[in-house]
Image 1 (cartoon, rainbow, N blue to C red):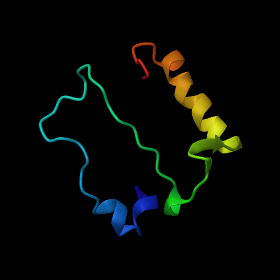
Image 2: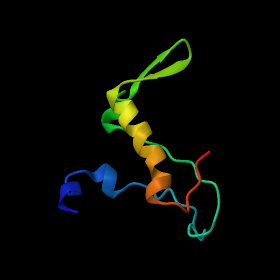
Image 3: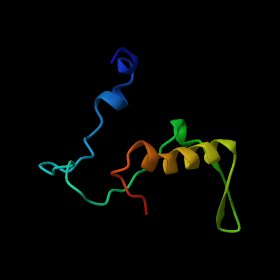
Image 4: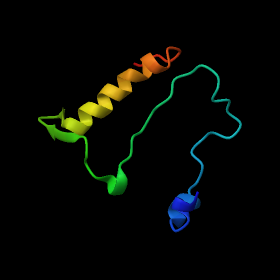
Length: 76
């Protein structure tokens, strides 16, 4: 927690979870990946399509590896 000590934005952030919802139950969830200072680290958009760079390909590989590490998860 010390690494967040001087960052009041993180310490005072509003919770994003729905109050009273049981996140252990089966359901569909959206996942958002954010980067520091909203930097475009994963690639660029060319003609309306995402052209992944090396970091984007790493993120994609790890995303799909989720089902190997956690076989109870299904990706869409």
